Amino acid sequence: MFGNRTRGVAVVVFAMAVFMGPMIAPFISFFIVANPSLGWRWTSFIIGIISSPSIIMIPLFYTETHHPIILVNKATEIRRRTGNWGIHAAHDEYTITLSELFENNLSRPIKMLFTEPILLLISIYNAFIYGMLYLFLTAYPIVFQEGYKMAPGVAELPYFGLAIGEVFGGLFCIWSEKAYVKKLEANKGKIVPENRLPPMIIGAIAFPIGLLWFCWTGYYHDSVHWIVPTLSGLFTGFGLMGIFIPSLNYIVDCYLLFAASAIAGNTFLRSGFGGAFPLFATFMFKSMHTNWAGLLLGLFSLVLVLCPIGFIKFGKRLRRKSKYAFDLN
Image (spheres, rainbow, N blue to C red):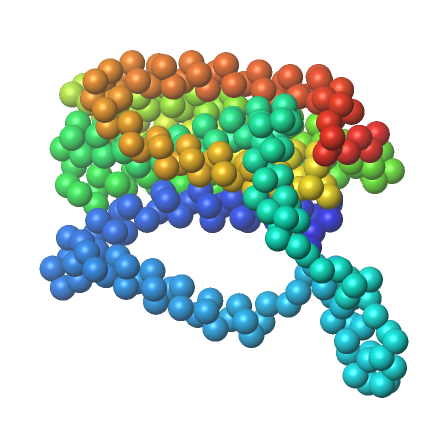
Protein backbone atom coordinates (compact mmCIF):
# COMPACT_ATOMS: atom_id res chain seq x y z
CA MET A 1 0.00 0.00 0.00
CA PHE A 2 2.90 2.36 0.70
CA GLY A 3 6.09 3.01 -1.25
CA ASN A 4 9.54 3.70 0.13
CA ARG A 5 8.89 7.43 0.38
CA THR A 6 5.69 7.10 2.42
CA ARG A 7 6.10 3.80 4.29
CA GLY A 8 8.02 5.39 7.17
CA VAL A 9 5.16 7.73 8.08
CA ALA A 10 2.64 4.88 7.78
CA VAL A 11 4.68 2.76 10.20
CA VAL A 12 4.75 5.71 12.65
CA VAL A 13 0.93 5.83 12.66
CA PHE A 14 0.79 2.07 13.24
CA ALA A 15 3.39 2.17 16.01
CA MET A 16 1.71 5.10 17.77
CA ALA A 17 -1.45 3.01 18.14
CA VAL A 18 0.49 -0.07 19.27
CA PHE A 19 2.54 1.78 21.90
CA MET A 20 0.23 4.53 23.12
CA GLY A 21 -2.76 2.24 23.69
CA PRO A 22 -1.17 0.31 26.59
CA MET A 23 -0.04 3.58 28.17
CA ILE A 24 -3.43 5.32 28.05
CA ALA A 25 -5.59 2.30 28.91
CA PRO A 26 -4.52 1.70 32.57
CA PHE A 27 -5.68 4.97 34.10
CA ILE A 28 -8.93 4.88 32.09
CA SER A 29 -9.69 1.34 33.27
CA PHE A 30 -8.87 2.12 36.92
CA PHE A 31 -11.25 5.08 36.93
CA ILE A 32 -13.94 2.94 35.29
CA VAL A 33 -13.53 0.23 37.92
CA ALA A 34 -13.51 2.81 40.73
CA ASN A 35 -16.77 4.33 39.50
CA PRO A 36 -19.61 2.58 41.42
CA SER A 37 -22.07 3.19 38.57
CA LEU A 38 -19.83 1.39 36.06
CA GLY A 39 -17.62 -1.36 37.53
CA TRP A 40 -15.08 -3.72 35.94
CA ARG A 41 -17.47 -5.09 33.30
CA TRP A 42 -17.49 -1.71 31.57
CA THR A 43 -13.80 -2.06 30.74
CA SER A 44 -14.95 -4.75 28.29
CA PHE A 45 -18.22 -3.06 27.32
CA ILE A 46 -16.45 0.12 26.20
CA ILE A 47 -13.92 -1.83 24.14
CA GLY A 48 -16.81 -3.69 22.50
CA ILE A 49 -18.67 -0.46 21.76
CA ILE A 50 -15.58 1.14 20.19
CA SER A 51 -14.74 -2.00 18.20
CA SER A 52 -18.24 -2.70 16.90
CA PRO A 53 -18.18 -0.14 14.04
CA SER A 54 -15.14 -1.98 12.64
CA ILE A 55 -17.27 -5.09 12.16
CA ILE A 56 -19.47 -3.04 9.83
CA MET A 57 -16.83 -0.85 8.20
CA ILE A 58 -14.30 -3.55 7.31
CA PRO A 59 -16.51 -5.64 4.96
CA LEU A 60 -18.21 -2.56 3.50
CA PHE A 61 -15.27 -0.24 2.85
CA TYR A 62 -12.06 -2.32 2.79
CA THR A 63 -10.87 -3.13 -0.72
CA GLU A 64 -8.37 -5.71 -1.92
CA THR A 65 -4.73 -4.52 -2.07
CA HIS A 66 -2.93 -7.72 -3.12
CA HIS A 67 -2.12 -7.17 -6.80
CA PRO A 68 -2.63 -10.79 -8.05
CA ILE A 69 -6.14 -10.81 -6.57
CA ILE A 70 -6.85 -7.36 -8.05
CA LEU A 71 -5.97 -8.75 -11.50
CA VAL A 72 -8.18 -11.81 -10.94
CA ASN A 73 -11.11 -9.55 -10.05
CA LYS A 74 -10.40 -7.34 -13.06
CA ALA A 75 -10.33 -10.35 -15.40
CA THR A 76 -13.60 -11.60 -13.92
CA GLU A 77 -15.22 -8.19 -14.55
CA ILE A 78 -13.96 -8.10 -18.17
CA ARG A 79 -15.29 -11.61 -18.82
CA ARG A 80 -18.66 -10.62 -17.42
CA ARG A 81 -18.88 -7.48 -19.58
CA THR A 82 -17.53 -8.88 -22.84
CA GLY A 83 -18.64 -12.50 -22.65
CA ASN A 84 -15.11 -13.51 -23.67
CA TRP A 85 -14.42 -16.43 -21.35
CA GLY A 86 -10.88 -16.77 -22.63
CA ILE A 87 -9.68 -13.80 -20.60
CA HIS A 88 -7.86 -14.92 -17.46
CA ALA A 89 -5.35 -13.53 -15.01
CA ALA A 90 -2.22 -15.52 -14.23
CA HIS A 91 -3.41 -16.09 -10.67
CA ASP A 92 -6.56 -17.81 -11.97
CA GLU A 93 -4.43 -20.83 -12.77
CA TYR A 94 -2.81 -20.92 -9.33
CA THR A 95 -4.13 -23.32 -6.71
CA ILE A 96 -2.56 -23.24 -3.28
CA THR A 97 -1.86 -26.56 -1.61
CA LEU A 98 -1.82 -27.36 2.09
CA SER A 99 1.96 -27.80 2.02
CA GLU A 100 2.42 -24.39 0.35
CA LEU A 101 0.11 -22.81 2.89
CA PHE A 102 2.19 -24.29 5.69
CA GLU A 103 5.46 -23.23 4.04
CA ASN A 104 4.44 -19.63 3.32
CA ASN A 105 2.42 -18.84 6.40
CA LEU A 106 3.79 -20.97 9.23
CA SER A 107 7.22 -22.46 8.64
CA ARG A 108 8.87 -19.67 6.63
CA PRO A 109 8.50 -16.91 9.27
CA ILE A 110 9.98 -19.16 11.98
CA LYS A 111 12.70 -20.41 9.65
CA MET A 112 13.64 -16.85 8.68
CA LEU A 113 13.64 -15.72 12.30
CA PHE A 114 16.22 -18.29 13.37
CA THR A 115 18.35 -18.48 10.20
CA GLU A 116 18.57 -14.81 9.22
CA PRO A 117 21.08 -12.95 11.47
CA ILE A 118 19.63 -9.54 10.53
CA LEU A 119 16.08 -10.56 11.37
CA LEU A 120 17.01 -12.42 14.55
CA LEU A 121 19.14 -9.65 16.08
CA ILE A 122 16.79 -6.82 15.14
CA SER A 123 13.84 -8.88 16.40
CA ILE A 124 15.55 -9.53 19.75
CA TYR A 125 16.09 -5.79 20.20
CA ASN A 126 12.58 -5.03 18.97
CA ALA A 127 11.11 -7.71 21.25
CA PHE A 128 13.06 -6.45 24.27
CA ILE A 129 11.70 -2.94 23.76
CA TYR A 130 8.18 -4.29 23.30
CA GLY A 131 8.54 -6.39 26.45
CA MET A 132 9.73 -3.31 28.36
CA LEU A 133 6.55 -1.51 27.29
CA TYR A 134 4.51 -4.13 29.14
CA LEU A 135 6.98 -4.36 32.00
CA PHE A 136 6.23 -0.68 32.70
CA LEU A 137 2.61 -1.71 33.33
CA THR A 138 3.96 -3.52 36.40
CA ALA A 139 6.79 -1.15 37.33
CA TYR A 140 4.76 2.06 37.39
CA PRO A 141 2.18 0.83 39.95
CA ILE A 142 5.03 -0.46 42.15
CA VAL A 143 6.69 2.96 42.12
CA PHE A 144 3.68 5.26 42.25
CA GLN A 145 0.99 3.21 44.00
CA GLU A 146 3.12 1.30 46.50
CA GLY A 147 5.98 3.80 46.80
CA TYR A 148 4.27 7.19 46.54
CA LYS A 149 0.97 5.85 47.99
CA MET A 150 -1.13 7.22 45.15
CA ALA A 151 -4.71 6.02 44.77
CA PRO A 152 -5.59 3.57 41.97
CA GLY A 153 -6.21 5.56 38.80
CA VAL A 154 -4.13 8.49 40.02
CA ALA A 155 -1.10 6.17 40.23
CA GLU A 156 -1.51 5.46 36.52
CA LEU A 157 -1.54 9.13 35.46
CA PRO A 158 2.30 9.21 35.27
CA TYR A 159 1.91 7.06 32.16
CA PHE A 160 1.22 10.40 30.46
CA GLY A 161 4.97 11.05 30.65
CA LEU A 162 5.58 7.91 28.59
CA ALA A 163 2.77 8.74 26.18
CA ILE A 164 4.10 12.26 25.57
CA GLY A 165 7.59 10.84 25.05
CA GLU A 166 6.15 8.43 22.48
CA VAL A 167 4.53 11.35 20.64
CA PHE A 168 7.89 13.14 20.52
CA GLY A 169 9.53 9.91 19.33
CA GLY A 170 6.96 9.50 16.56
CA LEU A 171 7.39 13.12 15.44
CA PHE A 172 11.16 12.65 15.46
CA CYS A 173 10.83 9.59 13.20
CA ILE A 174 8.57 11.53 10.80
CA TRP A 175 11.12 14.36 10.73
CA SER A 176 13.91 11.83 10.09
CA GLU A 177 12.05 10.59 7.00
CA LYS A 178 13.18 13.74 5.17
CA ALA A 179 16.80 12.68 5.45
CA TYR A 180 15.92 9.12 4.36
CA VAL A 181 13.97 10.29 1.30
CA LYS A 182 16.82 12.65 0.35
CA LYS A 183 19.29 9.73 0.45
CA LEU A 184 16.80 7.59 -1.51
CA GLU A 185 16.56 10.18 -4.26
CA ALA A 186 20.33 10.67 -4.32
CA ASN A 187 20.64 6.90 -4.87
CA LYS A 188 18.18 7.11 -7.82
CA GLY A 189 15.38 5.42 -5.90
CA LYS A 190 17.40 2.34 -4.94
CA ILE A 191 16.79 1.21 -1.38
CA VAL A 192 19.64 1.20 1.12
CA PRO A 193 18.04 -0.36 4.23
CA GLU A 194 20.83 0.85 6.54
CA ASN A 195 19.72 4.45 5.89
CA ARG A 196 16.78 3.66 8.19
CA LEU A 197 19.02 3.10 11.21
CA PRO A 198 20.59 6.46 12.28
CA PRO A 199 17.40 7.59 14.14
CA MET A 200 17.44 4.23 15.92
CA ILE A 201 20.80 5.09 17.52
CA ILE A 202 19.28 8.25 19.04
CA GLY A 203 16.37 6.23 20.44
CA ALA A 204 18.75 3.53 21.67
CA ILE A 205 20.67 6.11 23.72
CA ALA A 206 17.55 7.88 25.05
CA PHE A 207 15.86 4.69 26.29
CA PRO A 208 18.43 3.54 28.92
CA ILE A 209 18.73 7.14 30.15
CA GLY A 210 15.00 7.24 30.85
CA LEU A 211 14.97 3.71 32.30
CA LEU A 212 17.79 4.37 34.77
CA TRP A 213 16.29 7.75 35.63
CA PHE A 214 12.91 6.17 36.40
CA CYS A 215 14.16 3.22 38.44
CA TRP A 216 16.67 5.09 40.60
CA THR A 217 14.59 8.19 41.34
CA GLY A 218 11.48 6.05 41.82
CA TYR A 219 13.29 3.93 44.39
CA TYR A 220 13.97 6.95 46.62
CA HIS A 221 10.30 7.92 46.79
CA ASP A 222 10.66 9.22 50.36
CA SER A 223 12.98 12.04 49.29
CA VAL A 224 12.35 12.50 45.55
CA HIS A 225 9.21 14.24 44.27
CA TRP A 226 6.92 12.08 42.11
CA ILE A 227 7.33 14.40 39.12
CA VAL A 228 10.98 13.35 38.76
CA PRO A 229 10.35 9.68 37.84
CA THR A 230 7.31 10.80 35.86
CA LEU A 231 9.46 13.01 33.62
CA SER A 232 11.73 10.06 32.86
CA GLY A 233 8.93 8.82 30.61
CA LEU A 234 9.84 11.53 28.11
CA PHE A 235 13.10 9.68 27.46
CA THR A 236 11.80 6.11 27.68
CA GLY A 237 8.77 6.88 25.51
CA PHE A 238 10.97 8.65 22.97
CA GLY A 239 13.36 5.70 23.01
CA LEU A 240 10.60 3.13 22.58
CA MET A 241 9.39 4.79 19.38
CA GLY A 242 12.88 5.73 18.20
CA ILE A 243 13.92 2.07 18.32
CA PHE A 244 10.74 0.31 17.24
CA ILE A 245 9.89 2.35 14.13
CA PRO A 246 13.32 2.31 12.39
CA SER A 247 13.80 -1.38 13.19
CA LEU A 248 10.44 -2.27 11.63
CA ASN A 249 11.20 -0.18 8.54
CA TYR A 250 14.64 -1.79 8.33
CA ILE A 251 13.13 -5.28 8.28
CA VAL A 252 10.74 -4.33 5.47
CA ASP A 253 13.48 -2.66 3.41
CA CYS A 254 15.78 -5.67 3.85
CA TYR A 255 13.33 -8.37 2.82
CA LEU A 256 10.79 -6.62 0.53
CA LEU A 257 9.18 -9.63 -1.22
CA PHE A 258 9.42 -11.69 1.99
CA ALA A 259 8.60 -8.74 4.26
CA ALA A 260 5.31 -10.28 5.42
CA SER A 261 7.09 -13.45 6.58
CA ALA A 262 9.87 -11.40 8.20
CA ILE A 263 7.37 -9.24 10.08
CA ALA A 264 5.44 -12.37 11.09
CA GLY A 265 8.61 -13.87 12.59
CA ASN A 266 9.37 -10.58 14.31
CA THR A 267 5.83 -10.39 15.70
CA PHE A 268 6.05 -13.97 16.99
CA LEU A 269 9.15 -13.16 19.05
CA ARG A 270 7.93 -9.68 20.03
CA SER A 271 4.58 -10.96 21.28
CA GLY A 272 6.32 -13.67 23.28
CA PHE A 273 8.43 -11.05 25.06
CA GLY A 274 5.36 -8.85 25.60
CA GLY A 275 3.57 -11.74 27.27
CA ALA A 276 6.56 -12.94 29.33
CA PHE A 277 7.89 -9.70 30.79
CA PRO A 278 4.90 -8.94 33.05
CA LEU A 279 5.13 -12.48 34.46
CA PHE A 280 8.52 -11.90 36.09
CA ALA A 281 8.43 -8.10 36.49
CA THR A 282 6.81 -8.09 39.95
CA PHE A 283 9.22 -10.70 41.33
CA MET A 284 12.18 -8.92 39.77
CA PHE A 285 11.35 -5.44 41.05
CA LYS A 286 10.47 -6.63 44.54
CA SER A 287 13.38 -9.05 44.95
CA MET A 288 16.10 -6.86 43.44
CA HIS A 289 14.37 -3.56 44.32
CA THR A 290 13.56 -0.95 41.70
CA ASN A 291 17.02 0.57 41.49
CA TRP A 292 19.03 -2.61 40.90
CA ALA A 293 16.40 -4.14 38.59
CA GLY A 294 16.51 -0.92 36.58
CA LEU A 295 20.31 -1.02 36.48
CA LEU A 296 20.29 -4.56 35.09
CA LEU A 297 17.73 -3.71 32.40
CA GLY A 298 19.42 -0.39 31.65
CA LEU A 299 22.83 -2.00 31.14
CA PHE A 300 21.31 -4.64 28.86
CA SER A 301 19.62 -1.93 26.79
CA LEU A 302 22.95 -0.07 26.57
CA VAL A 303 24.62 -3.18 25.15
CA LEU A 304 21.88 -3.40 22.52
CA VAL A 305 22.93 0.02 21.19
CA LEU A 306 25.61 -1.95 19.34
CA CYS A 307 22.86 -3.57 17.24
CA PRO A 308 22.03 -0.62 14.91
CA ILE A 309 25.68 0.48 14.86
CA GLY A 310 26.73 -3.02 13.79
CA PHE A 311 24.11 -3.21 11.05
CA ILE A 312 25.11 0.19 9.66
CA LYS A 313 28.64 -1.20 9.29
CA PHE A 314 28.00 -4.86 8.38
CA GLY A 315 24.36 -4.93 7.19
CA LYS A 316 25.17 -4.84 3.47
CA ARG A 317 27.59 -7.77 3.85
CA LEU A 318 24.99 -9.82 5.75
CA ARG A 319 22.30 -9.11 3.17
CA ARG A 320 24.53 -10.39 0.37
CA LYS A 321 24.87 -13.72 2.18
CA SER A 322 21.14 -14.00 2.91
CA LYS A 323 18.77 -16.30 1.07
CA TYR A 324 15.81 -13.95 1.51
CA ALA A 325 17.22 -10.40 1.73
CA PHE A 326 17.79 -8.25 -1.34
CA ASP A 327 20.94 -6.32 -2.05
CA LEU A 328 19.76 -3.45 -4.24
CA ASN A 329 22.90 -1.31 -4.05
